[in-house]
Amino acid sequence: MRAVVIEGFGEPKDVLTVAERPTPEPAAGEVLIELILAPIHNHDLAIIRGVYGYRPPLPAIPGTEAVGRIVALGPEVTGLAVGQRVNVSGIAAAWAEFFVVRAAQVVPLPDSISDETAAQLLAMPLSALMLLEDLQLQSGDWIAVNAANGAVGRQLNVLARHRGVRVLNLVRGPASVQALTALGFEPVFDTESDGWLDRATAATEGAPIVRAVDQVGGRAANDLLSLLAPKGELISFGALSGQPLSIDPGPMIFKEAVVKGFWVSKRTAETGRDEMRRLIGELVDLAARGILTLDVEATYPLTSVVDAAAASESRGRSAKIVLSPR
Image 1 (cartoon, rainbow, N blue to C red):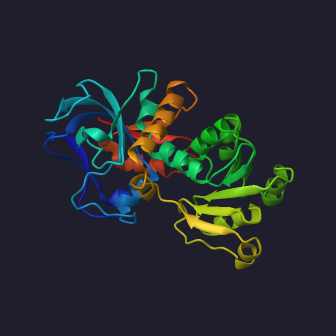
Image 2 (image 1 turned 90 degrees about the vertical axis):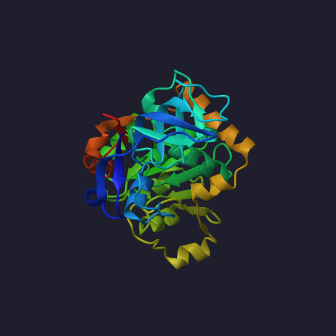
Image 3 (image 1 turned 180 degrees about the vertical axis):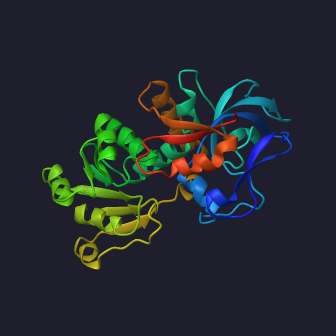
């Protein structure tokens, strides 16, 4: 089978290759899945660069989420069938024509969910849903999020609005403003435009912004702190800028703000089976009803993974880049 392989960590353009590998066979409690689509997430690229929370042993096949079809069952697998279309997330080696996962990891999907949505249904939406629940918000509360045109930002908008929570969106560039406005995700502000902070402050008409989600790092976190109400919480969710948080101590002290991190891998590990089933069930239900739809900007074959990775990090992208077997 064909698979994307890295022999070392580094920039995707330098380390991503495509190679022939033996098709794996499912062991007891495992299933073999044929790839349909696999998204390129930011954390996939961080793993490839060797800067994520863990490093896989090398050589490694990247890819942590996919939609595929079960083609073989290992011994002791029950409740699943060959031919079922499933999502798998939190895995390794999804960027290949075939891969094996534990049967307990697969989520069967109804036909009403498109392949494009199915491919990215768990990793980012589950992160957004867990984050939203941990924020402990009430209907009518305001939150602010930067990098709002990304996957988590868009999904946070859908899930928060479904619960009556209001979202103030921060993006870079007029194209991102237009993209979110077209989806009805307002208010939205371009942080590269003059006077945006004053306009964003006025947008809630005096209602406090009680939580702020930073996905960028650097001084962008301080912008969110400026918007945050006294005793509010600033959550560090990502570092797209590659820069450490840069926060002025005055506002943090005088607002008595709380700054903390959120890592979905740790949150998932601490979540019980029943709770996880409830969260995943909510996402599948929202997707099946068309409330949660996840678009794809472009599809690349595995053999064009270098181009796909570059496209995934291009500015102004409005949806996921995904890989297909051919």
